[in-house]
Image (cartoon, rainbow, N blue to C red; front, side, top):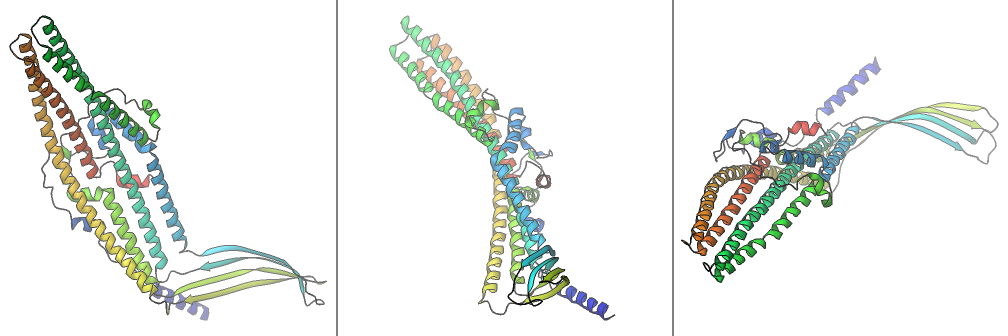
Length: 473
């Protein structure tokens, strides 16, 4: 009866002490933090699309681009390294969690000792086996807070992995768009080279019949050679983009031929509408916001762990086993060994070390909260800017398309008039320059339009479902 009463009192004491466990520092959860910053609607109006933003690269309608990005996300070495960092954080969490449970060890001992004394006063041989258990009860929650900090670090690294994947997908898409832009630029130069070659032959023929001057021939040669001088630079840009894409894919630049990107294709055309998503939803979706919030959670747990150092720490050690001893000339004797010890330590004087540690962790928490707010503000700015770019670039592409049609018509008309002698060759040269300028401007506008769409999807945090991405690791 006394044993039961004592056991009940001990349990009641532990429960009472556990109720005094130090909690993490108070902080708003992510949805409330987002609601405090996010507006109710976007300031820039854009056509809405109810389609999901997952695998956004598929919405460009370019199968080569789609397959390329999916290959990069599986083969990129930085992504593989980030996956290993997530596994490391998970292992650290397991290590921290193990501190909450008792530790059980097997023990064994053997000794052969000779003492210069007649028997039975000296041992000559002894051996023993047993088990030892130790436990540090987390009465005030310091170890549990360390586990929470480790879990927050794991969540942060998983979000950082998503952030890397999103950035890599966007960078690969941008490199692919730049590749197609450079290939289109090369085609534009080639087409205009043929146009200027024909103009040069026309001036030479007219000079042969006395209908033109040597000045017209020299001007035509100058126009042609100036254009031809631009071709090597564009070819170099194409090779640079191919090498960049190869490295993104985890391959050497020499293996770029296996990516099947050498054949020229048009710049991929993005969808004219944007995903229908609220500002708060975009912030919750963005991996950099989740990374910043994971830092807040980690710092909040570390504040609690620092405060828990003010309170006593307990340790319980238990040991049990058998020890066999043999005296000189006597039979073996066996003893049952059992020991139990409960110890406690409590800080008395530490020259302000614990208080300074608490101040440091609280300052780090405030810093991470400010970092989270800044990340959300920057995220909202990126979305607003990219929405504006996408809408305005679409208008620019449409208007430059009309300008190119007009310059093409002017080039054909000026050439015909020059053939008939109704116009000077200066009109042909001006028309050639206008046609080349408008062709390059339209090609550049298509590039910027596609890059704006990539930037928008990146700013919206699109690319995959975040919980599924974390679970897959």
